[in-house]
Amino acid sequence: MIMEINMTEILGGLLLMAALVTIVFIIAKYNYLIKKAMIEKDIYVKRVTMRYRYLDLGCIVFGLGVGLLVSSIFTYTEMNGDTIDLLIWGTILIFGAGGLILAHFIRKKLEG
Image 1: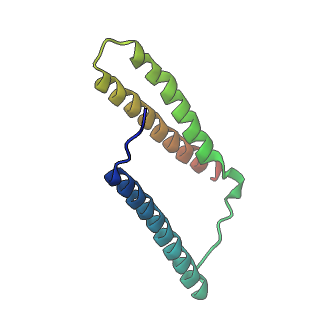
Image 2: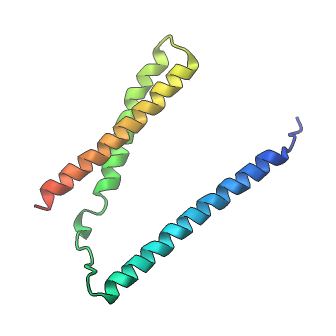
């Protein structure tokens, strides 16, 4: 089977990647400029909360894992394929957000 190369798909992919690289560059540049200006005015305080630096990531990954487990229930139902996909992705995103909220409350409790 020979794959047909569609020029619009290639162009769309390249534009998407260029947009992502541009967004990351702009965010990094302006974060650097803001920190530099804050240091020059002596108002920059370096964070000392390195004790719990993987707490957010751990809680988000835990939430995503629980979301995957819960969303597997939807694969056994007799619903339309699009509805099942929507429910699966929605469940995963909701539990991932719940993990982020949980990390916020845990950090707040641990830091005082």
